[in-house]
Image (cartoon, rainbow, N blue to C red):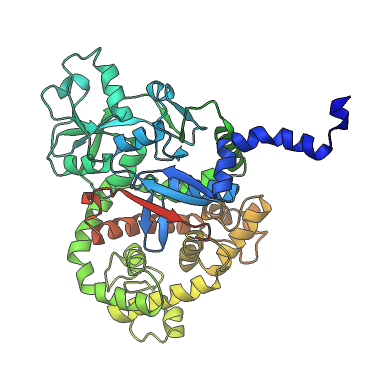
Length: 466
């Protein structure tokens, strides 16, 4: 009877007291308004672009913070070993750092759903003899990141190869060791396949000898705890972005253009950066500044168009470094298409006009990628492809979806549904993907100190408004 006489307000207070004393992790995050995430400074995780933060781990962490309606706080530890120690010691909520799920790590960490699959690969310099298997490494200098999954794999291999030795580096990241192999300072290292794919375009003498692991999964790591509230939210988040296709789009934005890597073409491009680009760089810089563009992007487009040959001409009559049609040149008041300065200025102006026609609400980098496709195949055809993308229940504002649909413009079943009709839709796809790689390489060359720069020990607060 006593309980029946207790006012409802008091019963309510009794019910919430335990929560006030012991709030869950997710309640603490929402109360403090911050999600603290450990990451690494690398092309496969998080890095700073000229227009802000980028990288697959950053994109996913930022999206998750937005889901929770809190600020994202990125922490970049001084070393990989520090990162593991900090997440293990509960110094952050999540480690989003391209971490491989391993049995040893599962002893002291929770892992969220896998978002990517990789293999671990032995890497060597193409100037040296390719090792056929682990036994060929006897006496060679093999160096790996300390306490990495690569070292865990080597420890397991040592049972079958007792003479296997390696050096554990406590200071450098995987990208730094790849640079050392490229510079012939060390003979071998081990890298995840995604890391090697991104870096091979810059360090073109790196080669894969063989895989040293079966396919492995990458996932976010959380401190092990009886409180699984954050883990459940992470699982819910990855289910959502997997089902709505956003995860696939993020992976495409970061890796889609890497699949077209070509050793010979990249080697020639690197040589042309040294021999041809210096004559025209000032024109690219001036034109980009005039039209509020990145000069390296315009230069990459120019290379795709003509390999920076001012006298280039196609069978259809387009000419010059930016391969302008006669009509476009006339519209832009370009008097001489083979004049490098005029051609580059005209190309930058035309690209600016094309991009301005693309809806400003489309997020970057998708808006720029769609503009590049329109520069190549025409604005009308890109709009046709976007409309078809919408009809196919895909996102017309995402390059990852539109590039799958563009080739359909060459098929009667599809182009007869469009306003502008037939187009060789595969060409703008190749065009954009090539430029993306040319741009990445040129940016890397322009900022050539990035691979040698040690990872800083810093805290970076990134507000939701970015």
